[in-house]
Image (cartoon, helix red, strand yellow):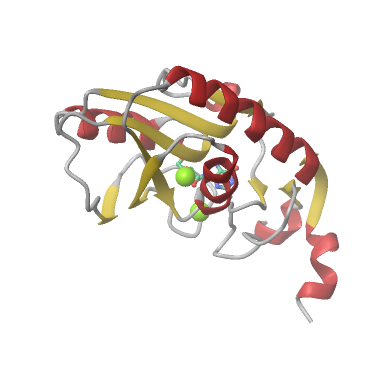
Length: 183
Ligand code: 5GP
Ligand code: MG
Ligand code: MG
């Protein structure tokens, strides 16, 4: 059974469920304060950001709206291709909206830099980024990310929404995938 041997497929737990929840509550308090009196639209980037969005949005006190975008830049591998494809577009008109993009992880930054440009051209009033994880050593382009959960080493991680070939998204912690899984 797959579920029984998951621990053999992980090397180190980098961020625990408790650390994630504590950090999201902190970030939510900042976002509540920063957007007081403004209409805030959270845009989650599918599929990796599903868990972050669910927990972060419920930590907010503010009245917000939510939308989703699906892009792909990875396929089943572990390296960014730099090629971004829209799989599902937003349902919301961004004109006059204060947009906060909710992401699981900033790796090369290529996906977000593309998304930021794309959103800017749709007339948003403001655009900021929240990312649970960031790999500073992997950055290929500089992303101005206002709300960052954790800076992590340049290793391929899974869990809490992050997958390898669509698996491991349901893990509660963020862990390094054991190299033998994809070697
Ligand atoms: P970037 O364009 O910044 O390189 O990353 C694009 C997307 O690739 C991220 O939003 C995330 O979905 C995926 N990604 C980047 N690094 C990792 C990683 O370490 N693990 C997993 N599972 N996905 C990653
Ligand atoms: Mg993502
Ligand atoms: Mg993925």
